[in-house]
Length: 353
Ligand code: SF4
Image (cartoon, rainbow, N blue to C red; front, side, top):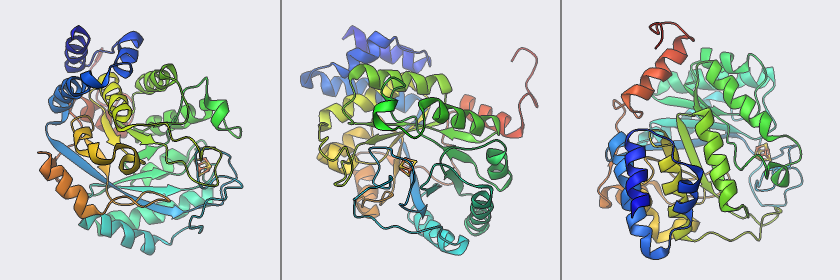
């Protein structure tokens, strides 16, 4: 297919596909699906080889959120049956993180429900980051605490955080349909705060909320515009007790097409298979490893994933390898940019670089 040859060539050169090309990937037939996976797999292997990075979620604070994101089991008024608790102590979080690291995780993602952290919350999370870093040499720590105010990203960076996650989730045009308590632009600003503080940005999407193909392409192009280092792709888990409880509209084939499209648009970013992979990809999960280079190990925030051992077996059986602690995730050109941002804008860039 000419389309796939063009997309592979562009992916290998880190060139942005056109919107039409991205839409065409989503419109491919089931008969073409293996060709699509093979083509996006070439791009994945060019930038990440056969490595799979493992990430581990630690839920610092669960439920009781005042925001109304309609996909979320922790939203205001949610009737979903989930654990609700406030702030794990640093030693509790560090113990949980150590379990993930022992299972092979390179990155620990510290997540808290809520609109965004108070300055006191930043103090707590800073202590937690220091505890985790002190006890798990070389582990990457990503914080995911909601919308950031001025100066908070810098404080997290100073405490040792490597990255900050804040997803765009869906297109700007449909954002108001999934949330009324904050706006798409608030989310964009937080990703930019994290980047200007020198944190590696992690920002992705949720597919399966009733969006159109054009919406999916819009959000992935918006992400490419922000250029996060990692892009988690979630597939909606329609929780009972949330407004999207009836939105079961994904198939394994559609999930694979979405992941392939994200890989073509963000060829050298860490594309991470995130929530919903077990329920929506089901037995097709190993094929998805040809598209993504990163997954979450074990459980998600308020739902259980498949056991860590099953993930490790799946990776080995599909011919991939778990990325080691000493290996760099991002390709050299991108890793260099992360280091420069971390030292501060303009520190050792040559003129005109
Ligand atoms: S702000 Fe976060 S925790 Fe709160 S409802 Fe939205 S996604 Fe859920």
